[in-house]
Image (cartoon, rainbow, N blue to C red; front, side, top):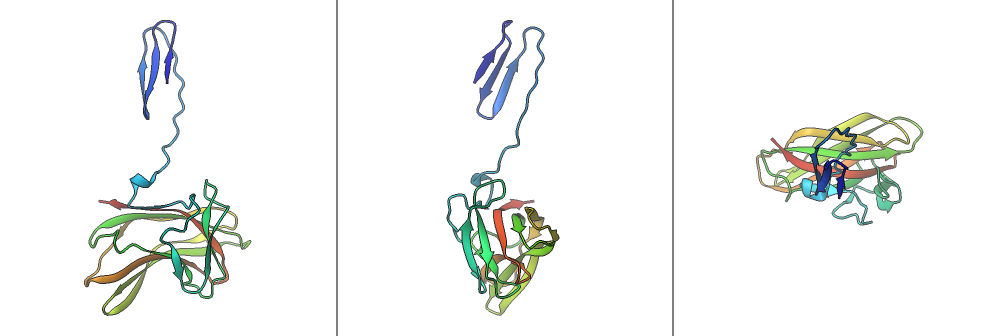
Amino acid sequence: MTWAGPDGDKVVKAGDNYKIKIVGDMEIHAVFGEKKATEEDYIVYYDFEDGDKGSWVQFGSLDITIEAKGHESERSLYASNRSEDFAGPAIDLKDKLENGKKYSFEIWVYQETGSTQTIKMSRKRSDANGDDYGQIAQSDEVESGVWTKLENEAYLVEYEREIKELSVYIEAEKSVNFYIDDFLVKEVE
């Protein structure tokens, strides 16, 4: 895109950048939008827009489906018919995360119970000695009918023995059905 003024003024767009050349008097008004995250920006990126659950599976007894409700989008993953508080959608990140490194985790959650709920992003780590559980992020104030972000900007992944599984799962009180969207993980320093 190029715009040229009468005195030789120019605005040229090259990719995501703009070059501005001012020859005479010129007043510039510009609006620049925030760049939307893309899959290339993250180690793990799920927005469910392709209608696919990808590597997400059931952790415990529940149903997971792709539904036509999303966080600033058209689709998300829906967790329903949950039998236990811990039952929720899960994804194994063993092959994506490295021991001793810090990662930023982010996911958007939505529920429609009519009251504020607590929703957690938790992790399960399994090795030869058994399973170990921990919490990555939590919000005690997930309002009904509002998308809410759960995040941890610097979660340290660490373990002593070789692991068989390193899963992240989303959980809430068992009576709460919920949606998840825009799950993002990236390495941080």
